[in-house]
Image 1: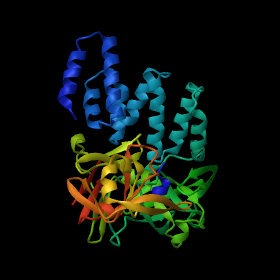
Image 2: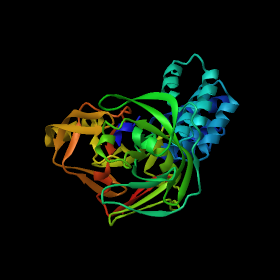
Image 3: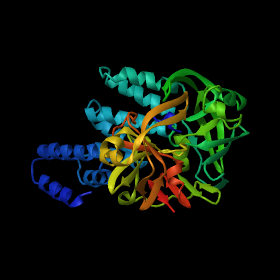
Image 4: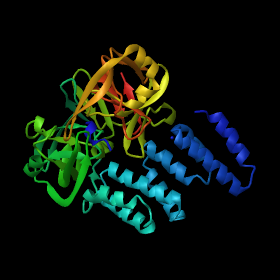
Length: 415
């Protein structure tokens, strides 16, 4: 659900690193840092991982490479950066990455603790005020605890990723949505299930308006054969979309913190969704997924052989194409498009956007051709990251006979 949506040319790098090894240590560190910054800026993550691993002065970049690929070593690597130079700019950025990692995994107590440590060391940073506001809802929340991974087979209706769950002993029919940074629930649903409400509140700026929310915690959550404790949910009003559009016991979303713990989702068009299987081996060169900033899932695709990045959203019914696509491929759209409108329904209501409509657009994902017909390209609206060209929904990746979303191998595999 989009409403909750808030770096491989190795031979040249080897030559560069060899040359750098023959200069003084201080010069070597400076030039290498500049080169690694370029890889981060250009989002050449596989190259960054290799280059940083060959440089003893690249602890921060090693940590970044681990974080974008969801490597569990990222946490300890960022903490090492902080420990070695607590007041450095890299330490400040390491704190930001750690905060994102903790939010992604539902460890809100750890998130607040790392922020308080950061604010004490960097009181003069302009971002502190906004960070305090954004993180206020997570005050006094526990860390989510995950039981062992175990495979389970669920049934779906042909166009969903269902998440039947037991929360505090009561059954619900929610759905999986990695586009939701937080798991979500309606006010009445949370009360019915006996969740413990927090006094902290927050404001979510959605597509249509700002929506207030508070947090509540479930002591026990079971999904398939996997068990979780201290799972926190963002609580939204029952009288606004999308909660108002579904019956009680369906008014909830299993978001990114639980999905990361489950790790694997194998969807078959015949009606099964298998979760919690043993993940595939992680091979960076074969990965087509990253976690941007450590906590937003992004898919690498192609349009007319041009590499592009899309958010991957398991909760979005349709694929939304943003203004950067319209700018990059303006000649194509002038030839094939016509003026139109596009509406998106999310938390807080419905947003209407000016769009260019085309009869079809074909994308390449995991070596497969996937076609949107028709396609609506929004000419003004875009993700907060100007390099994100679209938000890939179920109408795109459910065109095949099945797919595997593997958050360990960091790959979307299409059947």
